[in-house]
Image (cartoon, rainbow, N blue to C red; front, side):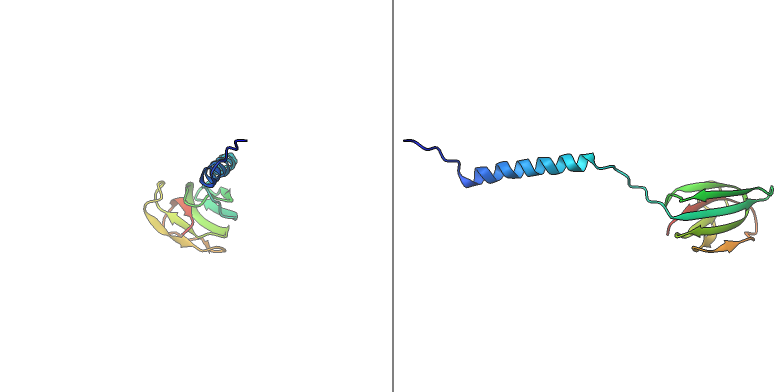
Length: 114
């Protein structure tokens, strides 16, 4: 009687390939979301008397503000306020819970996160 035997390294290699393939399939099925959001609301008032808000802002994203003259940061992230629409010339920042009704000029954008 002749018995063919698979050596142990070959079996391990087959199992490793099977486990790796299953892990790759599971990883590919997971949603890919790198964007994280602050929790809460950011309110601002404009020089035209209008009120606006941003809910659960995405961290690192530059949000436009329309001629903001006051702001209240009720999120859990720091809000950096900018004088320009591209988040480049910063006025300063509002910590979580912070409020300002004086920017010295109208501001035009905000970014959340440190």
